[in-house]
Length: 168
Image (cartoon, rainbow, N blue to C red; front, side):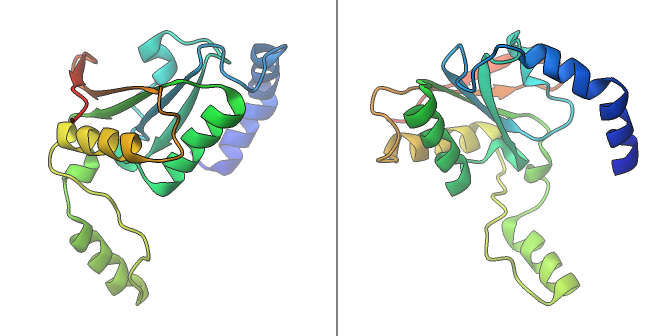
């Protein structure tokens, strides 16, 4: 599927359906929650958490890694749109566990002649990735101190969530 196929879908029904679903909704999520998860196409956060449009902010990136941009978005969501809960959801079988930062950076350098200025954020264990993300969020001075932070590993075979305790 290319961009034209996606745009055709939007013109056929997507735009109308999206407008109808968003009618009357505020930009602030009704459940005052932010979900950070992986961009893996198998994961549908709305289905997973039984969400309707307008109920949560959903932030996605490769590996559900807490980056400076993820922190920026969470802080804006909290300070300007009233969210108070953050769920961090990584998953089993994540592609970021299949290579290292150095391997990927070297691959890019060989292909382009440049090393990326950013870190890919690979990890070996999704639970350790979640724990590191919770630690980074808890230490962020701009995150509200009363934020409810919860982390999970999603089993992509069963879609069961296993909670990762917040590191102390």
